[in-house]
Length: 139
Image (tube, rainbow, N blue to C red; front, side, top):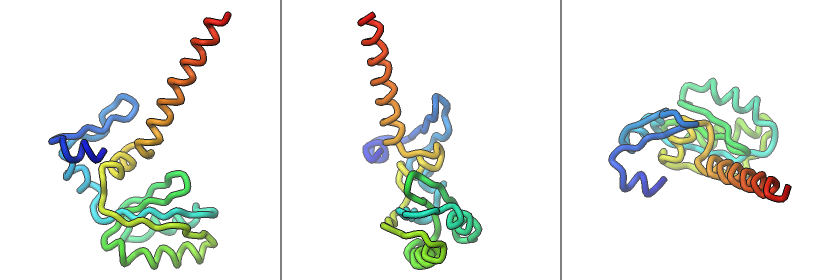
């Protein structure tokens, strides 16, 4: 994704064979706006996620495995509020990452999963097809 960001004038995001977004890298990242905060959480985060969705200063919220990803303005000022809210909901924050939106974040926004998750599932499908071919040959 970093190479595409650096080398390409226009980028298309394809999800299950359908174009879901296409524009310049900077325009795609501007869609998210603000900062991206990724919270690695341990515990039941559903109530926490619902509360976070209710804040005006939160633009987007998505869940990814153990992570809660959100975009907001002035992310560095929001992190203490988020940690306090997690504590109030008996959810442990095990790590926090703050950064400007990347193409990986844009992909996650449009598809609901990380690019690496898609690569893993494609590799798993290839491996399963290979196993099926090998079983047919043995018969």
